[in-house]
Image 1 (cartoon, rainbow, N blue to C red):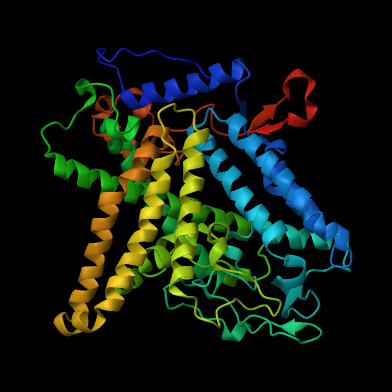
Image 2: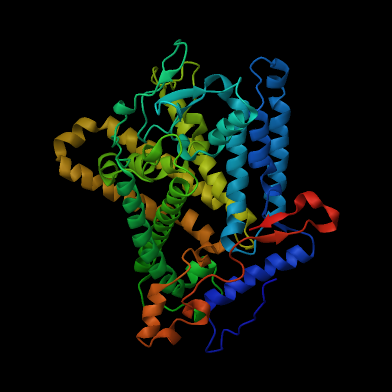
Length: 508
């Protein structure tokens, strides 16, 4: 159990971020001792989000219609287990507490999609490599294969980020041509027709060396940005506590104009989120490729996290969320946008009506907002507000639709009045202004949840340099520590209480 430390704000050694970390941890351990919450434990926490849909999909049901109809019972069980996870689980580690809500919500959406709303055993196919010839082919559900082959196929279906290498991959990332309808036998994958860079700027590496160096570069710069961010950004009590910070003695930047403070907070929020995504995504891809195995597509199966910046300049908010933000979230939050047909192609031949497009976009953004709202719900902080992340993401959908509608209606006038250069500048301004005035919905709640107090990097070269220069005492509290991880980081064994052995496992 973590040690609870009470610090006096009038004490010279007082450090707000350190005090808040201990406060949030004490809340978790108090609730744990009272039986009101429990930690995130593997495997029990993933029964509904992963293991139940995995078990169901590993059993062939194309020739067992009764088993196919039983998917409704499986869906109810998924909802129940994920609801239990959402309402009973948190963590002493701030990031884990927040992640519980993301896992529960995403697991529900994606599990119901795979089990209830689509028919992957009929329609889905992944790129696989023939071990004898080394050729890539489209592998549909191996109903006549071994149990291990079916389990591997279903596991890849459920855990594949952005559905890379499947016939319903997110449309913005590089993918080979999908399998054709009606063809019998094994279909070869046209890897030679797979683009290295898409129109939205997503790219894949050509060689292992290029891939490793690219991801290591992302880790280095994002590590540095995160380190600078966590070292100095926590001087603002808004970052530590959210907008409801306690009293004026916590506020260290009174002399800065409030409009500039608002811009700075917007910049901090966007920078922190972007650097964190690059950092963890690059580590994930390197571990998956170099340690866990190359996978079916080799380096071609590891596209970049974001698309090109030019997409934002060309398309504004639509380019930002389609090319740089929203598509990175994966397929689970984009369920209304993509469906698999029996011929392995997306339903894109008929242009959707305007009304259907509006509903689709808003539902997709709402699901993303709901996922982040659930993250705040499972954090230990009592000040989070469920509705603000939802409002943020829905407002992004509204912004995408409004800008697209205005540009479509006044396209001729805009093209006559402004050159291509100024149209691109205008798009960038629209994105920056819209994010600034709506970003509080997400950043406020992440601050309330304490997510900015999480330590992503184990070692801080910036703090080391500050101490070498003789200014270490100015950092305050545990912000002076060069090694950032404490006893709350890393797994440990957890015994299920009151004889509930099935709740035992590795606690995160």
